[in-house]
Length: 113
Image 1: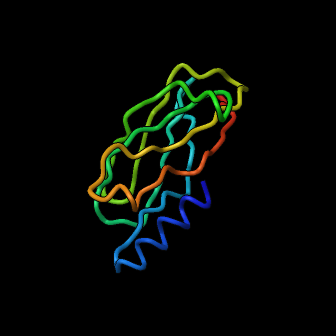
Image 2: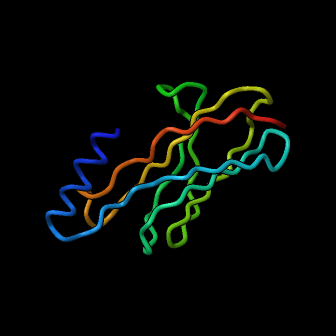
């Protein structure tokens, strides 16, 4: 993942363009079995996408659409179990220049409620 980000960032720099990097994931347990994840990018244009989640990095089988506004993406997962560690990732769906966009890193969160 890190090498992919660096490669795409350098490619964008060489072409005098800006690459998108997703970072700073935040979690909020809003209710029993429900968590909101918010992720930021430094672009000012909205990039459509979705969040995936699961109990391991290799089995992220739940997905929800990300509500996106300029540089902020939010998704709400329901049906989560208290005390279980979940892994989350943002994945862009379609962008004008695929070569400059990568998935976010993988974040984890233990469901508190």
